[in-house]
Amino acid sequence: MNDDLHAGGARLLADIGGTNARFALERAAGRIEDIDTLACADYASLVDAVRAYLARHPAEQVHHAVIAIATAVDGDFIKMTNHCWEFSIREARDALGFETLLVLNDFAALAMSVPGLPEHELVQVGGARGAPGGVIGIVGAGTGLGVAGLVPSNGRWNVLQSEGGHMAFSPCDAREQAILAYCWTKWPHVSSERLVSGPGIATIHEALVHIDAASSPVLTPAQVVERALDASDPLCVEALELFCGMLGTVAANVAVTFCARGGIYIGGGVVPRLKEWFARSRFRSCFENKGRYSSYLAQVPCYVIHSPYPALSGAAAMLDQHLLDQRRDAHAHA
Image (tube, rainbow, N blue to C red):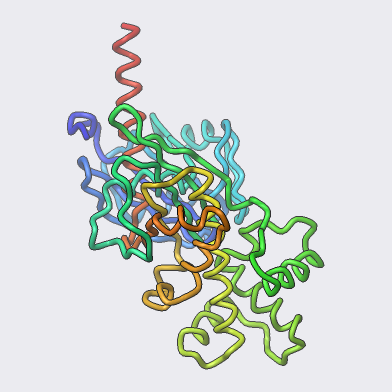
């Protein structure tokens, strides 16, 4: 970090998911303050949400901002996958009066936070110790399913942005295959995100009710999780176990795709809430269920991220690097 790069005043940081928008101000390198969470549904647009946040937390003029958002970022036009917001980066920057508006995928920001996470904010679930300097994979379930990679190169980390959450769902046993068959009656393409996400927990439960011809009301994801954690409903217990196993399969696919010997880091809003239950679940057995690559994956560690706002620090690091690269380019062409 370069303190002189922060001389222009506070920077706006944002982590935008399908449900909540988290904002903060960075007034000096690593000094992230005034963290606030706004419900996306309460605002017609991203610009409205930013203005509302800045009105609640008045600061000196903000010149530079970074938005980590839960969707693919390719070009000027941004359209969220699991929410209605859409915008032009250039038009949003001009409307807000920013000099810089860097927009990036939310899991790219989460990935960039990983090298700086303290050990006490990580809980290891199986495997050995991550290989120093090894490629890192990041997955996480929230309103959607995020995937990213982190590759070391020339003394710095490079993020591999990904929309891996939309890969086709792959069942690992007959029960999951039956759930997939049920989902095909609802959608022509069943992505991993359809099941390995917060809403996906309710979909798994719904599928089990249908498959078993069980008598059960329609439950929200939170209700399924609550009834599973207190063991009051066997079908909810199975639904949550299946969710954890499906996440294990996704994480294993990411691990072998990236050769992630540095480990798999699990973020998102769902898994950290499961606490010790997750470590006892079928996640790890499904993670290592990879045929000829089972022994390979047995060595790959998985870590659950328990930091409260990791994507904000990752977004700050990426904005810092963006501004530093701009400065170097300007000097090179001077």
